[in-house]
Image (cartoon, rainbow, N blue to C red; front, side, top):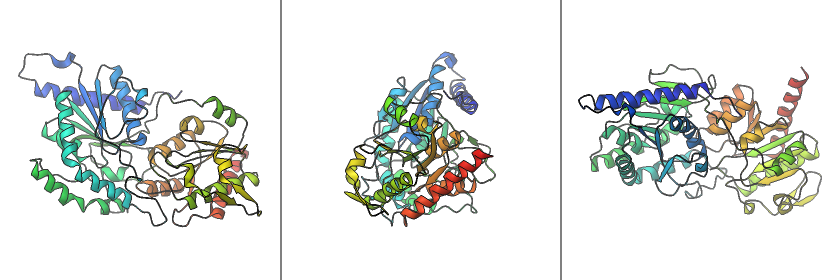
Length: 431
């Protein structure tokens, strides 16, 4: 069990303070003591997904312990909502995935997938705003806790209702961009500002700035969930605070099957590309071939691969190894290989926290990056888009990762970089 994060408790105090100040201000001329009435907090996220919602809900769990009511408004159905049974969940509609965007993450893939998601969020702004408004009125919301990514409606309704709002993100560049920090994401989002403001005017919502790279005036507190020192140094406005990483006090344990596999393999490679991203059958086969070659070279003796968004049909039928042999991929995907264990979902933190996990092959998302840094697991990063390119570069600078390119993925490059990281680990252990 992880020790309670002191930053998490500090954040809780911030939230409680804002709610109580707001309530006192709104009721200073009313002879009702509302300080004893449980306050209602809305957690809002348009994009949804575990990496966005899990840390926010970990904070919510502490607020619930202190008597506050939490309502979660997001797309889709958060799969781990059973971890937070006291949280009321309201759906914004089905969650939009990269497959829905017909973004197959081919070699030409870049940040445009995020731009398409922004475009959809703008088109859905009217109904999203109404959903926030109706939910806020139904549950008498006192404070808004808004995920920053393409979630303008959450900030706008808080402003319209004159309620305090706390912003949330895992990327400092989204909160407060700097010209010396090159990031192409902002260039993709800016064209939608005029379109969004036109829609706002049509429904009498005050035009504002898109949240990317600028803290709106309505935000009382802007929180960046990151490791201190992970981001490049920069000055920050007084209402922007770096915290975290927010990591659960408890986490899902290994299943008996995974526990047995981990305990019988001393050099395990864990492969997972998050809950959203996937790549082509060609790239999947290159990764699978690299894994087999690494096992045959005795670089690693076990592999756990959480496929998540990747299906078994996203592989070519056969693999051709460098020794001339041909292997049926179906036998590996059906767990017939003694040293490769394929799962759909995995208890990621428990795997990374296991002493036999030596390397993490990841997409470099914020949640995965935080858990890898926390557990001290070196990473081989294959970024797909969004903040992952920047995370890969920062991990490389920190000396805890090497990165690959989705554009030019190569079996020999994967194996060589795995070998380099594993040798580096071995050398550090010998010192």
